[in-house]
Image (cartoon, rainbow, N blue to C red; front, side):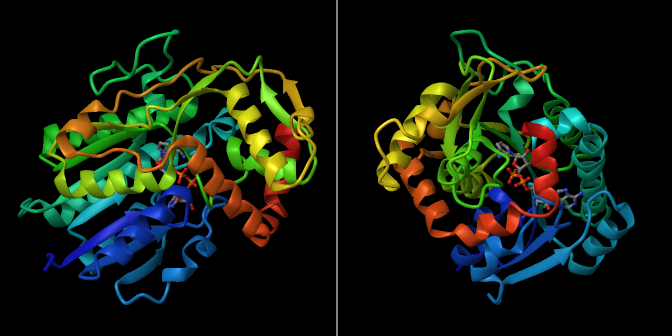
Length: 351
Ligand code: NAD
């Protein structure tokens, strides 16, 4: 029988957080899971509707930038561990509005650690602050090489700078105040429930609607892609088996140039939508590059593979198929999002 625990998961109404929440609620009936989320544009309780009545699931609407509120929640619920995913997460938004990235990603992370130390400092035994981060903190790679856990930090966008700063604060709280912590840095995720401003859902949605597929620059940017459920299982493993003060890189050993990924997606969509071969590909249009655009990211995930025995469960083609099927089967999910404020943002950004 597993230990009874009170686990705070932040950002559980978002893309990755919703998959982590579902996994924990279903897999660990003896844990009380608290989902803390401010429900920004990116948070959507529809993502976890299937588990909202589970006995071990609790929702707390709160903003991590509100230090007093966060402190009060720790006092009230006595969380013994935190899995911290809440963040402003979209690079393009960080270019037009960097300030909120500092507030949520840096100050918000600090507020959580302060509140945790406030109730943990007498007895740190069995406590854990698990900070979920990105490979973008490492900056960009040349044609070869991989990011390892010891690669130096060189963030290029306000988003990655804010995540890098939060990683440093977590480490510093560990060194200075003995906060037990783990950090994981993951590559690009894709899968069901991803907000349609991100590349794969944006393109699936545009192909369905016969709209242009905006590709930055020459399309030669390289990213390492991981199916979101595989990230969730890695987080589960790191949370339970990871070592204090360690960093784990998580990635799919799955590098793709944007343009090749888009062509593969177009091929899958032609098949699913019964379209002529090449019909979706004809929607590709190249647009002006964004500033500070990193050329290539790729993760060396050997440490988590060797030490914790984690590996991705699906190939990229399988994951993409599952993702496309999910978006085709859930048009109302997209419909609800591609209206209102998001529409305004989209117009500003891409039209
Ligand atoms: P997301 O934007 O889909 O979800 C973020 C969630 O955080 C939303 O539910 C939002 O409402 C909530 N949130 C935002 N600001 C908040 C605040 N001030 N207080 C409380 N809640 C707030 O993001 P995601 O893609 O699911 O990413 C989750 C985490 O994983 C982030 O920390 C991100 O940096 C990291 N990450 C993401 C990827 C990726 O490819 N998406 C890859 C590696 C790491």
